[in-house]
Image 1 (cartoon, rainbow, N blue to C red):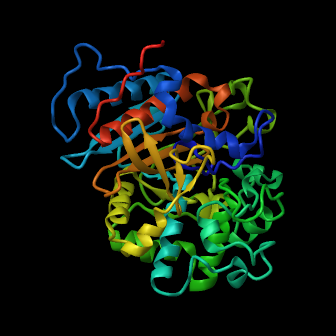
Image 2 (image 1 turned 90 degrees about the vertical axis):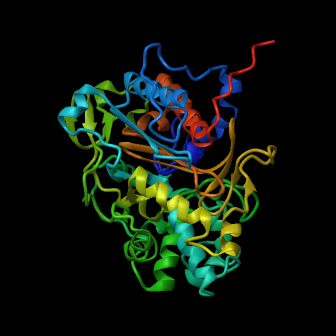
Length: 439
């Protein structure tokens, strides 16, 4: 579930599905969006007739109307709630919030609510590493064996850069059967970085170190263990001292258990009786309170996500984080350039998505953006920024199983991708391009 932008991957780390491996399943969503319009022929609908369009913010009226309509359609397709925040850098950001009527009895969703960030955590972890690189305490060429002796097979061949850009060849711990009870909320044990790493390094290696790109959550629990070893501090302390406090992010923190610190969005998954038939039996039953054909998974612990996906934030805080990151407020120019040095996600598509250090370059239909996605039960969030950080966007959907098993939830997946594309285009102040007529 812990994932890359637009489903380049997610930390949902379930074991592979019967139809295709989990790492490929989670990667498909974001990467598919680069050709989404052309491949599907879908065009994001224009504003409904009669909708009042007042320019009270930086977005064009028709763009805001598109976002509102798509959020409504996403809820109608089965999403319990949706938060969209778009800042085009020209005025007050647009915030759109939609919620299913049944979910309002639990909580009235608001644009400033905290939510679990899943794999967006990786962008913060990469930032922490690069800060230490700038301070001379680490080097991207350091072998993992130097800092985690004996913990990672072939650690003398795997560099810190390979962990950060997913070229290490280490298998994914979230696909291990022993993690599934924690992912489903049935096992509430607190996981440490070292414990998660020990699970991950037992997985088969898909390729030798440095051979190619392949998303693996184990890369980042290794990064977490390394950060703790080098600094002598917990990840929660590092996030607070180096990221949240300096930027004034009052609702951004590294979660070590199920506790929330502020008003938060409730996250849900369908209960076993309402899971579509295409969802494998092992993934049909989440722990949590019953709610109108759903299970409230909000209070399940994200500890199993660790440095790969345990953070909490808000759409507003994350916009501020991206702005600080891309403008050079958090990193010197040399380290920011390293973060944005990419390797092809698809070897045969060098012009396509590129994996950087904790973030991905994504060629959207409206222009190039930098992005990451995060999925963890109850929450799927995708975040975008332009290269300067002046323009940012976030899309949160308060459910996540649909992204792990896309074939079982075709309608919500289709509308979710449309909303992501529309949000990227609104952020860049461009209309969503129409698909070319067939033939």
